[in-house]
Length: 324
Ligand code: ASP
Ligand code: MG
Image (cartoon, rainbow, N blue to C red; front, side, top):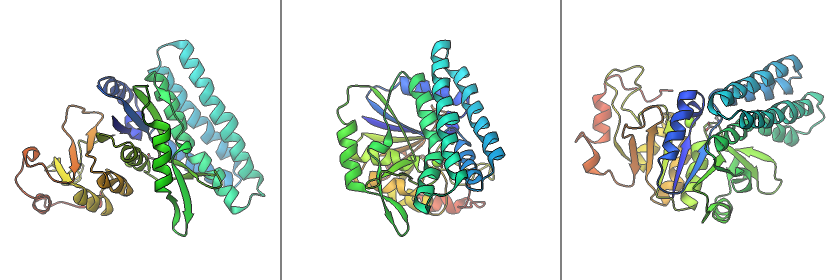
């Protein structure tokens, strides 16, 4: 089996979603699909949580409506069957106008202690993944699972951290040996193992969700589907000479992620490296492009340049690691 993760831009346009459909339909083995929220939705939800904390009801109303409208429109574009589209819109409406509104109300009314308020804010900001996963699961006729049943965290002074052993055991229990060819789960969201409060894996954390699942299930590979052709030697928007890096080691990928390359969320590499699971970075909008392969050794057959990664990067005069 394989794990495929689709980022917000892949899910944020009709073109992206129709490519997602084709990519998933072409799979020849069971897959677990991890989805982000549609692009820009998490930012809106962060704003919403902030507005509610500040008691700005008018701003909350505006944001709730805009989150709802974005999903409403997309559902109409990607779900052909009118009755199905109506049912999914009803579900999204319930999440936005009942659940999210009630969560905002709790923050606006105040009286919550710091932990309760944090829990409510996390509920709000992770709801984008819930909504996109519902839409995608219906579009793909696939089974939907809820990540908070198996992605567990515990608090540390540096913030919530994944309880790795427990998480791996629960992923195995929940997702191994399933009969369904396609299972959809939400990235980013997690749950405190003790209090069951909603937590997150940090902004960009859906990649990490996918890596935890791939590692626990000993997946054949992890595919991170995004909107660039792979790791590049430079920011393609700034340098015409930017080239895709065909092949990287886990160490090299980790270094580039830590240095600020936004292609993959840094904690993603470790769980898959420990299990020696190859990671592919692929472009949803250019699925025929080979992408970047990350593994324990660089496969020299796949390198179309004989230079080491360092040399490739040094050759790139305009290279700046801090691109976004
Ligand atoms: N939706 C979340 C974010 O925007 C998580 C993710 O996309 O990986 O940060
Ligand atoms: Mg990302």
